[in-house]
Length: 357
Image (cartoon, rainbow, N blue to C red; front, side, top):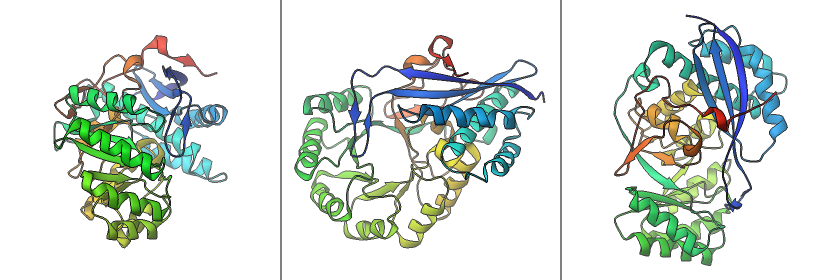
């Protein structure tokens, strides 16, 4: 198989009319970094990471630093890349942006491999299902009630069967927003809430108990992701399922929460956890303890990967890259369908990419 002879780095931005906020972040830009590998035979593959407005110099530096580790590898040698990166990054540590850069490169290599073999990634890995339940995400705390209801009803119109909204803005505000959404969507739509770690245990417990009457499906990141005992307490005292995992660079938190019976849904972030193999390894660990997998953010990669595991239960849907790629994902009647083209089945449009030198 021809080796990778070039690695290019780009930046892309999706339009954002005004800042959006959750309980712990205020976001002023929806931006991405794209890694593109090219083989000696001219086959390319792309992988991207979501960066928002954070640390652009650090991110671009990490991506530039991993470039020489990718050059010369064949697209299937993702394991070799992981070993090279582990050795190179040991001094400063293998987590943080070092792992983000590794994962984006890993995803690009999988895309390239699929294109060389003429098959989608999910078919190369072997599939268990052909579609995945998907939920509409957003519900930002910065929204007015009118904006919030407009978003969730638009998701309903598009055929989504579940929506997630942000909480952590104070008990009164949170309950008002949850009640308004339930009134707007009726009893048939699932509602999830996400605090983005923005609450303490006492407040998260109080909100959970009051929200039970609204039939909330799950509570995501109610408290600090390192407070394993807090998750165990919260899960033992409320009926709402608990979801977490997007902050994790490995499976240590998953193991700790399984031991304490403090988790109902595992939410790995494909880029933060290190790429395709590590994502699947974490899903297998979760599956060994009957914990379902519902990953964070990257639906364009997560949907095909979820089709390859037995314990996937859904994907999160944002539309942020839809306007700057060449092939949007098919979503109908609450399900997302993996693309049938080779690799991941989509690419960023050239006019949306700015080279990072």
